[in-house]
Each structure stands twice: as structure tokens, then as C-alpha cells.
Image (tube, rainbow, N blue to C red):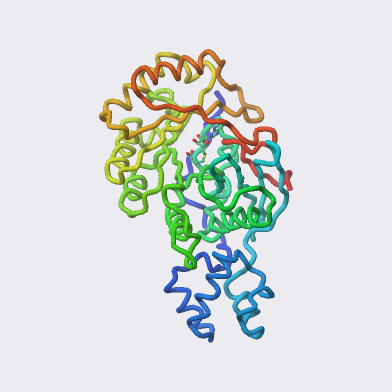
Amino acid sequence: MSEPLPLILESPRRGQPPRHWADLTPAQRREYVEAAGHRAFRARQLSSHYFEGLRTDPNEWTDLPETVRASLAAAFMPELLREVRTQTADQGDTVKTLWRLFDNALVESVLMRYPDRVTMCVSSQAGCGMACPFCATGQGGLQRNLSQAEIVEQVVDGARRLRRGDIDGDRVSNVVFMGMGEPMANYKAVIGAVRQLVAPTPDGLGMSARGITVSTVGLVPRMQQLATEGIPVTLALSLHAPDDELRDELVPINTRWNIDEVVNAAWEYARQTKRRVSIEYILIRDVNDQAFRADLLAKVLKRRGNWGWVHVNLIPLNPTPGSRWTASRRRDEDEFVRRLRDKGVPVTVRDTRGREIDGACGQLAATDTDA
Ligand code: SAH
């Protein structure tokens, strides 16, 4: 095996993007608007333009006097994401966008339409410090944490695309933190962004917390903290192996918080929030897809009781460039599913979207050569 990559938990200290409306709480918005010399009620008008109208162009803020439009726009609506490229796949149902940030960092987001929902897959960091060897993002290390507004803006862009009719559907119903980065390593901005997504309009996008999924490699203290926030988002835990020896290799942070600890934290999250936790498990041929591992996975999960606290989501591996691993054989996948079902563990196999545009799980790896 090649030299393992280092784990990076702290974001390198870099310049932060300019302050944006979506970085502020409703109280701060009023306060800052007044501090900038405007009447406090302008805050509500601005929120309504941004979160309901999805309008950042001051020329469209026709209920505001022209003289105040430019100054409010300059103070609160800086451009945070510049579109570098957009690609579509799956007959137009999957749209991947590459963004350039203020400091030239690159991130990607993916909008996916399904018959019953529209899901926005967002990035929480530029790069990732978790160093999982099967994941394209993990190979480049961490550049920096995204700001709260840089996360919200990805969702607002998806909403705008729907409104323009680039993709069918009436609104973004689901947001999954499964793009680039480890959301629990950028906890404050991620929770702040989630609060903006679920705040009723016009203070936020008015989404349901149930439609939001935060996926993590298993930073236990943060999982515990998430359970106390009072926002019942869905927690997804990227387990990928039922035994520590293998998980140490596949998800290196396991050397800090092992399977027993992360599964306990997931169970606690389900117990406290009454939200069923999703266990993510990539199927990698002859690495973690053996029948005995399916049995062991069922055992690990059922040890915590059998009251429907958990659901297993199997993900066929999306091979990344240079990877020595490939997806499981069909019969091994079927047997893995059968064994979990036999033991009463609810399980589904994820349909992977956007493979041909490298937009599927684990394939997001924006680099300068992309741009
Ligand atoms: N850091 C978080 C969220 C981003 S990754 C986490 O790891 O959970 C979102 C999901 O995609 C995770 O379950 C991750 O393990 C999975 N993934 C990463 N690389 C993949 C690949 N090459 N094929 C399939 N899934 C992958």
C-alpha cells in the first residue's frame, strides 16, 4: 500500500470570503442594515428578495429606492460562487457545477431530479482532510472550510435553476452534505447553513429538516453535538466496514474513533432525535463485500437493539482515477443484501447518478486543470 495521507481536522487559516446576507442571523441582518445607515425594515425586504425571489441583482429590487439598492448589494450580496462549468447527465436529470471561490479554490455541487424529489448535493469544504483512499476528494487534502454563505449559495443556485426551468421540478426538497468535504469538521458553518435552509421564509429557504442529510466519517463529539441542536436532520454515517482492522484502512479517522464508538454515537443520535440513521456502506470488490462481513455488519447494528433505528444504504463503488479498487460483482452485491435482509436490517442499494460526468459520490475532485 502507498503511504497513507495525513488526517487534517483543522482548516488551514486562510482569508475568509466577504460577509454575505446568508452568513447573518435575522437579528444581525437588522442590526447591520441599520449600522449601514438604512431603515431596519429593509432587512425583511432583502431577505424576501434573496430567499423567496432568489434575486441578488439589485436592479430587480424594485420595491427599494434606487439609491439604497447599490449600497445594500455591495454590503451584503457579494458574489461568492463564480460558475466555471456546468455539465449534465442522465438525460438532463443530473446537473454538476464547478465553482470558483473568491480565493480561487474550486468546489462542486450536484443537482439531481428524481420522480418524487429534487436533491441538491453540496460541498462543505474545499477539498477534504479525511484521506479516505477510495474517495477522489480525499486524495487532494484540505484547502479550507467553506463559509456558511458559500454553502447556502450552492442550494440557492439549485433553486434558481429550477425556477429558470433548467431542470424540471418546483423546488429543492432535499439537501445532502455528500459533496466535497467532511461536514462535521466544519461544524459551525454547516449548522449555520442548515439553520438558513430550514428557517421559514423570508428569513430562510423554508425547507424541512427531514429533507436534509448530513453525512460524516464519524467525528463522534460532533455527532453528539448535532443531536442537541434541535434540528432533526438525517444523519448518515459512512461506515464502509464492520471490523476495525479494515475500517482503519478505508476510513482512517477510525483510528481515532472506532466502530464501537461511532455506531454508539449514531445509535444515540437516533434515540435522541427519533430520526432513523443511515449507514453508508460502499461495496468494493473483494475488499469489504464478503458474506461474512454482511453478517458482521448486521451483528454490529443489531447489538444496539432492533427498533428500526437504522437503515443501510449500500453504494456501489465509483472507481476513481488510479484506484486499485472496483465495484462488487452483482452476485456478491445480491448476497450482501440478502444476508442483511434475512437478519431484519432494512437495506437499499443506491442508484448512482452522474457517473459519466464524474459527479457521483466520491468523484468530486475539482482541480485547476478542470477550470
Ligand atoms: N465526508 C462525508 C461526506 C462526503 S462523501 C462522508 O464521508 O460521509 C459522501 C459519501 O460518498 C460518503 O458515504 C462517502 O464514503 C461516499 N464515497 C466516497 N467516495 C466514493 C466512491 N469512490 N464511490 C462511492 N461512494 C463514495
